[in-house]
Structures are given as structure tokens and as C-alpha cells.
Image (cartoon, rainbow, N blue to C red; front, side, top):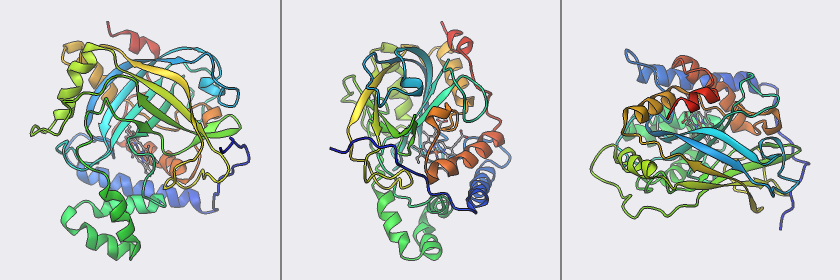
Length: 335
Ligand code: HEM
């Protein structure tokens, strides 16, 4: 079994900052073009299925290797969660797409990578790896996907033969993934865990719903989520996987070999999204900014895709005038 190692390193090239700023500008242009004349929304993950409150309980028996930053000592934190589709378009839920799980943990003390709010964010999707070898490939795909009919031609024009590998990788993003409450989510990209590097996985601890199939209704995921959140009993194991020999901090196309260790439990609160208070909560979460760089320095994001995200999320949240970081009073203002 691969043991956690501390000898990882990032591969940062001299011109990287300007390259990544250029990519973020290209994404921001897509966002501006999409929303011209309308309210500006997120550059990606535009469609929200639910904004909910949660409680995170850090376990008392976290191994020494994993017990850094947020996971250093047992305790409970209030949190917000946003469930989303990955696409930049607000489309029918049955369309092929990723699902997103954005977690904002409150009252986390310690020096921050960005700003000084006491929030710690983790952003996860329901895939363990991504098919993009670089953020350039990702942004080029998004640009080409503006018109699905011409996508393959545009992508081959821009990336040559590599386009076929990328199209094959994206083709696995199937539409009917079931309820967003019942999926396993992965941070994909790594972050520091003290001297180690780690990735996070969220594993449902509740029974999945047998009824969460694709339905004719456009927003069926939101309507499936609401009564189940209101009924309560939804929770996730929070598993931390540390990088071992042979794993990469830079390459998000590869999964890691080492075991994941349960470090916490996340429980969704039984707020009812269908009530006026639930809708106020949903609207508050919609305006929030979830960003992997809202983090303790101890959990600094690692690797090229994380460095690219620093530029991209900043531009996207600026353009849509996202809310400033919430505090625990906002969390407690709901019932
Ligand atoms: C590598 C793994 C990645 C994961 C797991 C991930 C996950 C997510 C999630 C869950 C959201 C929704 C956040 C919310 O609910 O507010 C999001 C938003 C977003 N992502 Fe990513 N993402 C990844 C990579 C990237 C990359 C490489 C880029 C661009 C270079 C990118 C650009 C964005 C943008 C612009 C948003 C919208 C930000 C906002 O306005 O709030 N993501 N991502």
C-alpha cells in the first residue's frame, strides 16, 4: 500500500501567471457573452438544485498524518452546501453533465490563502478525475461547446488529434446520474494537508432514493431534492486521501492509489426548500462565492488546475458581484 509522502512538489513555469490570467479572461468573455443584457451568473455550474445548511463534525480519531488544519481537532462547524450542474448553460437536467457539491465551512480559525474570512471551502464533483490534461484544454472545450453541432470540428481545428481523446473523455459525462443527494463527490484537484497533499471525497451515508431517475420535467433534480432535505436524515462521510509515491499533484486525469480515511461527517439540516425561509436560504447560497482558494494556508490548493482556478473564480465572482463571505450569524438566521 502506498504510504503518504511529503516530498511532492508543484511544477510552476515562469510564464504561468500571465497564461492563466489569459485563460480566465477567455472564460469571462464566454460568461459575458452568455449573459449580455441579463443578470450575470456563474461562469460554470450555473444551475442550482438546492442551497442548504449543514453541520460538519470532525472525528475524534483522525490519524496524525491527516490531523492538520480543519481536521486537526475534533469539533462541530456550521456549513452551507450548494448542489449544482456543471454546465455553463441552464439546461434540462437529463443532458449529459457533471454534478457539483460546494461546501463552505464556517468559523474556521487560522491564516487564510485569500482574504481573512473564517470560511473554508471545498468544491467537489461526481467524477474522481477529469479528462483535461491542462486548463487550456478545458477552456478550449468550453469555447468550442458554444455550438454543440460544430463542437468536434472546432475542437479538431484547435487541438488536432488530441480532440478525439478529449471528446472520448467528456462522453462519459452521462445525463442520468440519479439524485444529486446520492452521489459520491470528489475534489479531484489536491490541496495541502499540512506537509502532505490530499484530496477529499464525500460518500453518502444515507439510503439512496430508488425514484431519482431522469424525468420529463426540466428541473427534476431540484424537485427530487426538496422533500428529501426537508425530511432529514441525509449525511455524508468526509474522506481524506493523502498523496503517495507515484501520485501526481499536477495531473487531474489520474486518480490516486492510497486509501481514504474518514475524518468527519457532514449532516444536512432538515430545512424545507419549499417554504419562504427555505427559498431565502436558497437565494442566499445562490449569491455566495465558493472558491477553493477560500482556504486555510494549511490547505493551500495545489497543482495547475487549482492555480488556474485562482484567476477564473476571481473573474467569475467579480463579474456576477457575488456576496461577501457569510458568517455564522447568517447561518443562524434560519429558524
Ligand atoms: C479541477 C477540478 C474542479 C472541480 C472539482 C470544480 C468544481 C466546481 C464546483 C463544484 C463549482 C460550483 C461552485 C458553486 O456551487 O458555487 C465550480 C464553479 C466554477 N468553476 Fe470549477 N471545478 C474544477 C476545475 C475548474 C477549472 C480548471 C476552472 C477554470 C480554469 C474552473 C472554473 C470554474 C468557474 C469559473 C466557476 C464559477 C465560479 C463562481 O462564479 O462562483 N473550475 N467548480
